[in-house]
Length: 111
Image 1: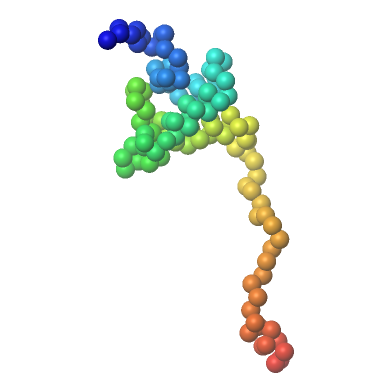
Image 2 (image 1 turned 30 degrees about the vertical axis):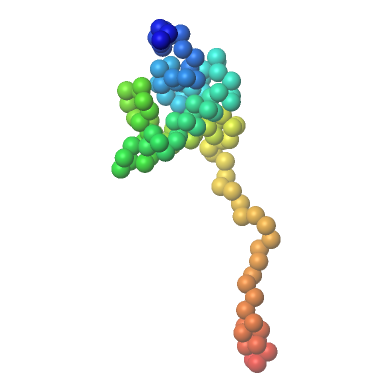
C-alpha cells in the first residue's frame, strides 16, 4: 500500500473543500478557483445528502465544524451566476389566456 500525504495544505481544494473553506463566501472569494470549480463546491454543499435531519434549511458538511445555511449557499451560487438578489420578481410570461366557458356564452345570448 502506498503511503499518501493527506495534510490539508497539500490537497487540491476540490477534493476536500471543507478543509480549505469555512463558508460559501470563502469559496466565492477564493482567487485560486475558477467559476466552474466554485460552482462544483457550492453545488455539492447544497446537496440534500448534507441536509441536517429535521432541519432541511441547514447543511452539515463533513470536515466543517459548524452547519451552513442552505440559503447562504444558494445566494453564493446566484452571485456566482451574476444574479442580483435585489432583482424584481419574475413577471408572468406568455399571452394571458382565459378559459372558455361555453355556458357563459349561452347565458349572454339568453339575456
